[in-house]
Length: 357
Image 1 (cartoon, rainbow, N blue to C red):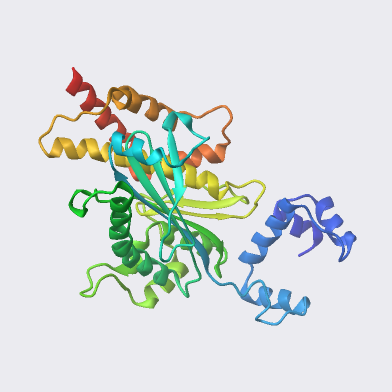
Image 2: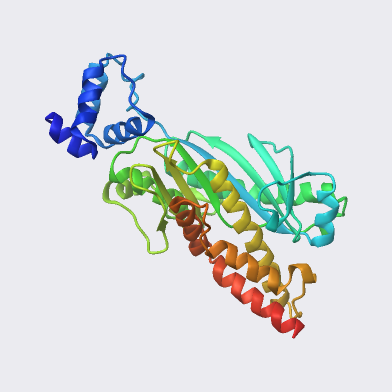
């Protein structure tokens, strides 16, 4: 491409490209420019990538375009333990200094396989285990199968850990659930449309797995993943919340997948986790109210966490704040929609209001 054509292709000015070219080998573009160039390289043809590596004198093993999948899996295991149990646990934990409207405290706990595991206990009676597990799978299908198989062991582990922390017998320990996962993608071999497709597949991994296999979840034929990456995959329930040139983000019925292309402008992993924790805690809280109704009980909660609490929670999660960026709003809207939490909050609010009326 000519200098002018290349600038137009990248969406930058001619002068910017001239500065890069004129600066020589010692010139270092700004972080935003580096992200634009990285994205262009990722979307280039395999031939162009090979010529780029050769021009830099890099072997195949050292070329940045070789690519391997590197993903940090964030699991969330919520469970309703009740306000009194919550109070007892939080007394020995570090209080959160963030969202005081949803008061919580946390502590690290040991997990046999997780790089990090934090137990968050909310004053409204919900506990959420947050597990961080980095992976370098050979294919997305391998990661999807691991997800389903590992949940089968993580859920009883979480129940036993709660039993020990609460000092209760096994029969009384509540059962954790799982709602949404979070995948933070740091590296991958995909380019162009295949990159977007890969993140969509991560947000809906069931399409890569035979969950009814006799010996438990098993991988579908490897050609399924190859075919989907080549032809594209989408579903009406998948919601995009990425920003062009900044990030790629999708929320699906099984979780959230996110890749940052500009560290300075994209969402941070802490911001994604904070949103997930809030959604998971409230999802579990409303699930408890639903369970009471299905068990033939009149739903009830301490007055502090009655229908007014849910009304306030709904407002906070559905109304944009002055200090929020557009990315924060898009993220929250996407997760709210795919989790169905907005409808659950309204239903639980109505049920609690009726029970006290």
